[in-house]
Image 1: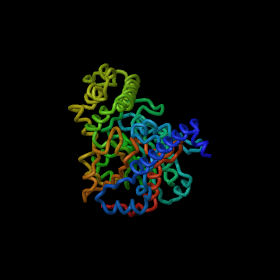
Image 2 (image 1 turned 90 degrees about the vertical axis):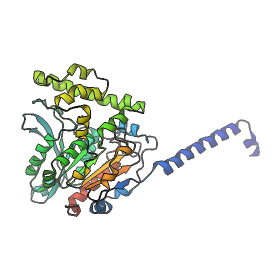
Image 3 (image 1 turned 120 degrees about the vertical axis):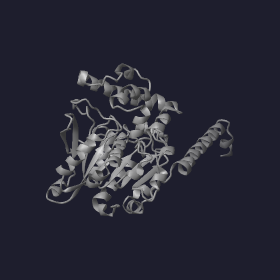
Image 4 (image 1 turned 180 degrees about the horizontal axis):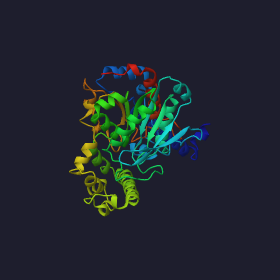
Length: 406
């Protein structure tokens, strides 16, 4: 035995093994001590805090991101491929919703297994989902939310964007971060269609921004129609968020910023082709917008003149809810990550959430990226965010009377 350990062939192998194991232990130690953390909850509303403490246990659990996918940028990029698509058994029904201006959008409805009981007079809960920009019902990050809602025993309704899901543009209008007119038409329609059910809404990323604007600008209407709202990876401050997206990390610029800009151009080209001469106002410089290298330039040449804003800053401020939290007239539960490339922790409205008059509960994880919040290294239907959605929706369905009423 002594001879073996003193062998010149064995000694280097032993050292390499020790170094490898020490490295593994160091990585695990760093992960357990510095990465795995409990989310922080910010709210000055004691009733809402009590509701979450009692009925949403996941918000108190440590979030454990995949040990090899801790980066917020990686979580953002992998958020779609790490989630499965729709099951063939999904009970999806599509309606083509017609807006007052003549435009149309796909309204996808997925019913729970117990829907027959709801039709027989039992009160249910319908959840309107507003997807992230350029996403549809069949985008996996949206599909996962639909599945979480249906697994809660509730009806999920996805309002897809104009021009998506094979529905052509039919009026000179397309969706922006600051436009909540479509939501304002769909919500009363759903309330009438599902007259025996209560209604709540979930907004994802840009969908959360639109939903937040609807709530703060239509306070009485929101209080009349919605029990509560939930936002995921919502952008709170577009002005400062853009600067973070464009700098300092080159991956933000080369991957996330560039990809989003390409989607904006594709949508504009599709709209322009389908609408023809009616597409753009005379002040729009479509050619410059389509050759823009940044989102700022695209918005300056196209969205600002099309929607008659004074400047890009004016448009972005109109879409942002930071500074307007106290205008929320219903309980709002939001999930954001500190390492979100678009809305990092420094841009979140902590103080507004903790105001005694606030109806916002802001849950912040240290990791998770933008629409990521992944767990494990395999594709699966429920990660941290889906579990949180399932628990919150279930709690609203079964204990909604405990939410703040005033």
